[in-house]
Amino acid sequence: MLILAIDSATSVAGVALLNGEKLLKEEFSNYKKTHSETLMVMVDRVLKECECTIQQVDAFAVTIGPGSFTGLRIGLAAVKGLSLATGKPVAGVSTLDTLAHNLCGSDALICPLLDARRQEVYCGFYDVTGAIPYKLHENLACSPAEFAVKARDVAVKKGKDRIILLGDGYYPYAEFFQQELGNCLQIPPPHLMLPRAAALGSLGLKKAQQGEFEDILSLRPVYIRLSEAEYRLGRGEL
Image (cartoon, rainbow, N blue to C red; front, top):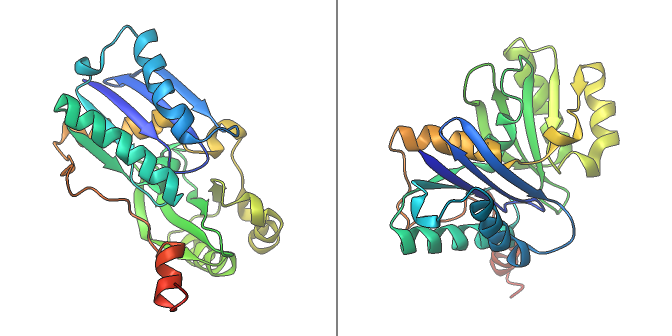
């Protein structure tokens, strides 16, 4: 089964092509250019270098959030267009699940973090000892302080003596997290720190094998919290 995975939920643009469990090619970019400039160019290059046409792809995988409001819309629009043009199904995967899958096999508490702006992070709490990430608590949008309290609480309840943080939500508050979590805190190396389209494709493949596809017409980003425009509208500022 050929899976084309497309991720643009954060500052990273990623595209990967998998043939079953075999990763054929992955492209990763985290440098300046916007997703609208790079994403479809990457898709075209990945397919060409693997001597594959878009019609040969069996299913698409896409990150559905949380993440950048603009980035999510670009990725979903691209995948919806490809799906409607080819008639191939789409597997939607949480951005936090995708990040957690980078560390598959670890016995630590895995906590992916995304920068949610406004002094908040999107966060998740996962057991990744199995083949897919197992969510230990609902995903949240909260302050770094609230996250640190919850991470310690979940770690104690689940008997985890190590807490691994990853994702772009770590960097703005690195010093704070180091102080709050102390010796139990670990940070992965750079190649595992950000979302990878290969991890997205792996989770998308598992969903595809089980027939867990999205309704392409009703598929929407999972933001967790209101967008800035919705927030301001609710406060009567617009």
